[in-house]
Amino acid sequence: MKSLVLGLLCASLACTSFANSDQQQLEEKVSALRSAMIEGDRKALLALSAPQLSYGHSSGTMEDQAAFVEKIASGKSDFVTMDLREQTITISGDTALVRHNLKADIKDGGVPNTIELGILLVWQKQAGDWKLLARQAFKFPPKN
Figure 1 (tube, rainbow, N blue to C red):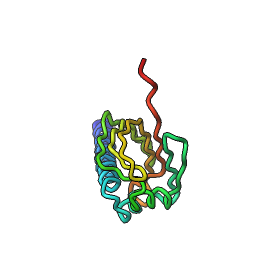
Figure 2: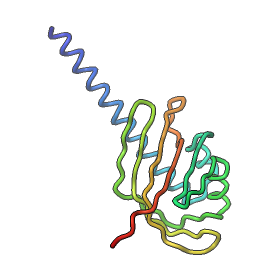
Figure 3: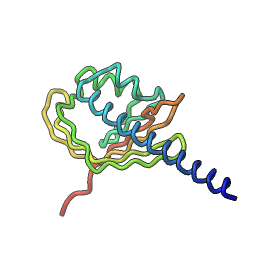
Figure 4: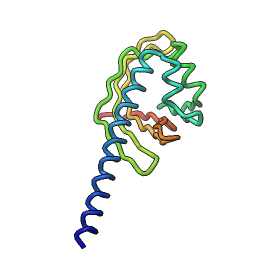
């Protein structure tokens, strides 16, 4: 009986360790994505995202991986600053949902603007590495 309890305790600790490791990896991936978007780093954007990426803007515009990377790397959409707040991470198997609020200074087509959006990122573990599979931005409800 003692060995069964000990085995269950070890399994529980191992699961917690894996979950914490995935949590930390995802925090690092989100931070790397933020940096790559600010820097317009084509190579990093490609490495962080899945070929099947579906990238949704708050306007309803949708992009695949190639369009997302090109828009950022070319400077057509230029993130000058980006602050991510109130981040939560929920992991279910090889899928993770990351939510945060984004405030950024941007230059879209050279026109400066400040945006504040809610973001949902869907990450999928592919070949042992977390890849951005989907992103959807949404506008906050108007304040009365």
